[in-house]
Length: 162
Image (cartoon, rainbow, N blue to C red; front, top):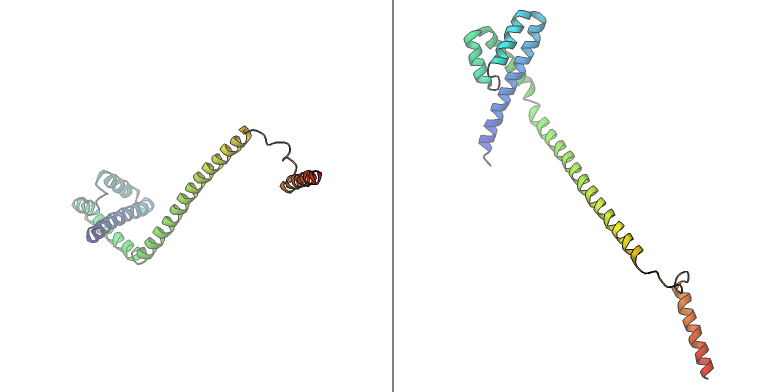
């Protein structure tokens, strides 16, 4: 795993996301204060490449310098407000998500295994029903009673022989 590359990629993604959040914030503010500028800004933002924050701001500088500075200022403010909490929130969020995903996975596995076990029990029940019935001598008589009757029969035959 290339940690440097992953870190750089994550930072770039975060910069692009903060640019997007800054644009959304400014669009909401303009919607309340200057509807005409808000319309222009929304059209520019949808037309241009907002996925790449750096390119977006560079293109915005060419057509409206004041708005480009405003996006950069809001983006920086968001970064200052968010980044202090981000590492711990990210760790906690990933741990909680992993725990929930594992729990759901184990619950699914256990329900599949339980239903397979239930199907096996049903198969055993049908096997028992299909077997020949047990003799009447042993049905209703506990094993000790059957053994005692054999012992009594042996005694009677032994006494008769004497």
